[in-house]
Image (cartoon, rainbow over all chains, first blue to last red; front, side, top):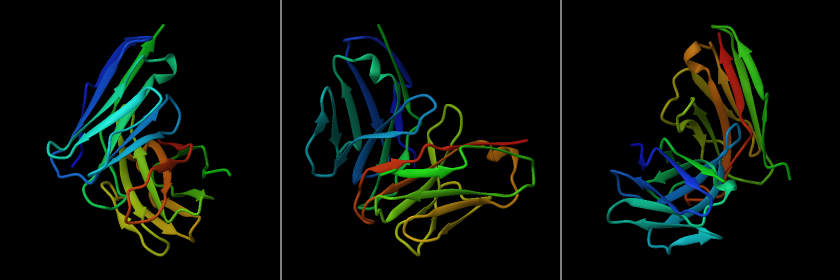
Amino acid sequence: QQPVQSPQAVILREGEDAVINCSSSKALYSVHWYRQKHGEAPVFLMILLKGGEQKGHDKISASFNEKKQQSSLYLTASQLSYSGTYFCGTDGYSGSRLTFGEGTQLTVNP
Amino acid sequence: NAGVTQTPKFQVLKTGQSMTLQCAQDMNHNSMYWYRQDPGMGLRLIYYSASEGTTDKGEVPNGYNVSRLNKREFSLRLESAAPSQTSVYFCASSGLAGISYEQYFGPGTRLTVT
């Protein structure tokens, strides 16, 4: 079953923070986050595994609440390069098949 | 390393025509995937291959067939194209089967069926 992402779209000014949420109705083993710029392929950002720690790199981090079957992506001090559509992908077992959400379109303006 | 490559980049078909989309990866990955992405939508899994010699249906397999030719190559065939198959098709690969690894995507094939 497809995870639900919220919000569907968000517009920021450079330097502002944003949170994107991903929620599933099924128990999850892992959550992946990808970013896709217009006309390009999705690019991997990070993966969170059941029982693992919060992951992050630079000013983008994420958390995974296994009990609530939810994950959140945190973008702090946003940059113009953060613009794009963010997808979460979830899998409900220790396999590599993902089900993707419909995406959150993030626009960062100067 | 080229990563994941796909051919062709663009294709226009008439209803009822057939074609094969090619995908290859040079990262020695075991698992490979075919997705379709419709405008403003997320990625939907068509077929996947957890390892060489195996293939399985995803969410939207109807109208498609796949072949895992060897460890590097995974092709997607449309036997009789329909306008509903107009989409962007992405191939992806990931590490070991059975463990949740990141997926690497190819540049996509933009297919229009008239």
